[in-house]
Length: 181
Image (cartoon, rainbow, N blue to C red; front, side):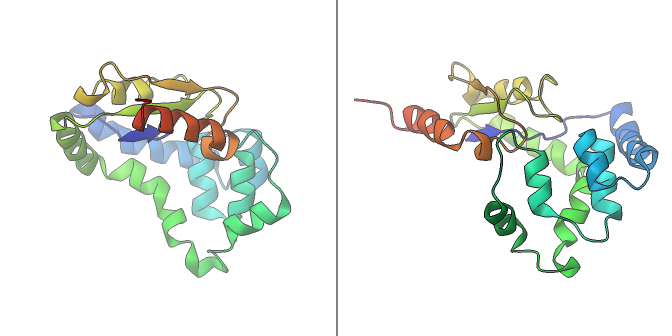
């Protein structure tokens, strides 16, 4: 299993009660965040607010905000292509709420992950505005199959590290999954 720039809540007790309320409060505090607001400050509150309130979600621009390299107009258009109009944005609109509300499902997922014995490699980026420096990579590295693996921090990459460092990631995965004989 390869885990790259993602999170899966592992909370219980009082934290499981308060986390959804805190995340909702962050969205409320952000107000009706625009794309410009999100570009200026990439935070959970602005991300959640933008996807909740935006009349038209601009996926290509979101991709640009959360990458280090410049995306061409064609690349941004390709990211937006699956979403020809607002009716296609149901998943993008609910994603922030899933993070905040499906904590029981996330805990059950962690229980299953901790039983696993398959190898686990983590690849997190150094400039992810949501995850870098939060220790989330270490959570995944605590899984049984992660012990002794060559986990890496991808440098000069933002949240969508596959866009920033796709070739480097492919090389790392190939060296890990297909070791030289």
